[in-house]
Image 1: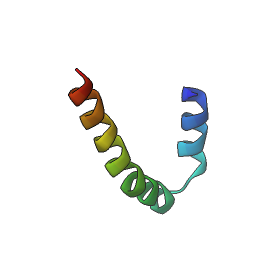
Image 2: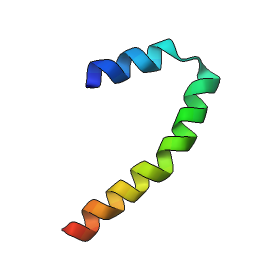
Image 3: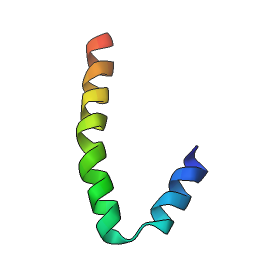
Image 4: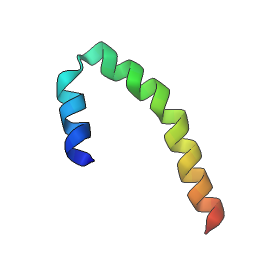
Length: 39
């Protein structure tokens, strides 16, 4: 899976990567909050 992400990051240009980060950050934050609540 990590190799897939490395390939994706290299494939995308900076603008697309910024959009991807903007979309993924709330999901990632919610996921961290979910893990914190579980523990």
